[in-house]
Image 1 (cartoon, helix red, strand yellow):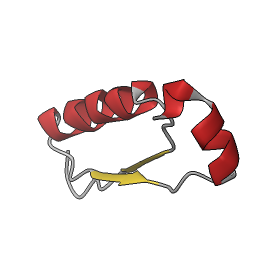
Image 2: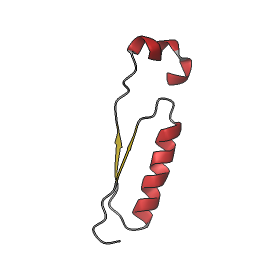
Image 3: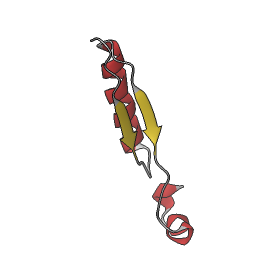
Image 4: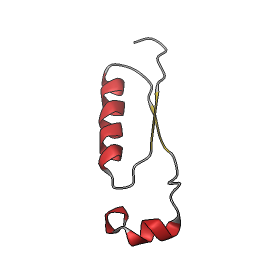
Length: 56
């Protein structure tokens, strides 16, 4: 690939989407792309995050 610069932008509360995003980025890099992997901040209220053990 020539001059391909995709961005993989994701939000991952539990890590599952993070792992998927890394696999997508890795595939792009293997194909010759310059990949940017970016995680956006969690928008849920801190109280809600604290109440759900899967987020910690």
